[in-house]
Image (tube, rainbow, N blue to C red; front, side, top):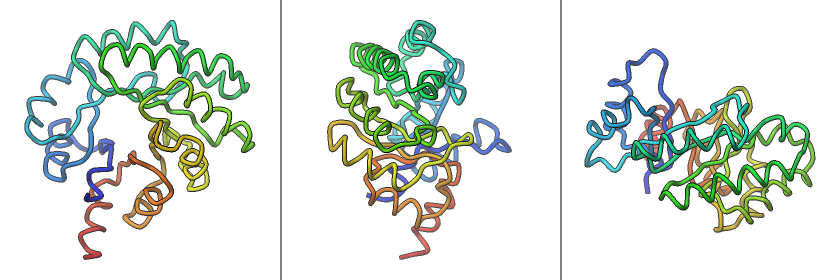
Length: 216
């Protein structure tokens, strides 16, 4: 499988939305992101390519509670989205409120399973200062069973190989790991995949793919 198939491509702010979609079509990335207003256009543009059109909720702030989020998930589900990245409530993460983290993650995962959606839970792992705290969040994910547990938003928090290895060690094949933030080269992407990541969030998707091509 080519490196492109791992990349959740983040748009270049200098591109129009159509330019963003055309780059995704050309490079065959794993997914792109749209909002409810642009979802149908993105799906029509990328029809037949296999590129997933995903959504993002409360990104990158992580300010919402479960009760705030669920109506947004309902809106995205009604539009036809099958994959959503969302940020855990960051007050709960910063205060190590593991009961609230579990309540939120479980509630969203249950909703997504009922509606045929894949949920990618953004933790902001660098905010958790001890390995024990990081393991606790991963153990919560083992119980809640989101589709993916994601290291970070990349704004400003970045993925580390150590976090990805720990996440994969705890989660195994039960919950996939997505790494995001600071992945800019093919060599970095390879290292994160080797550490256990199944998906990579990257604005540098094109450079990563071109790096793979240059290595052959």
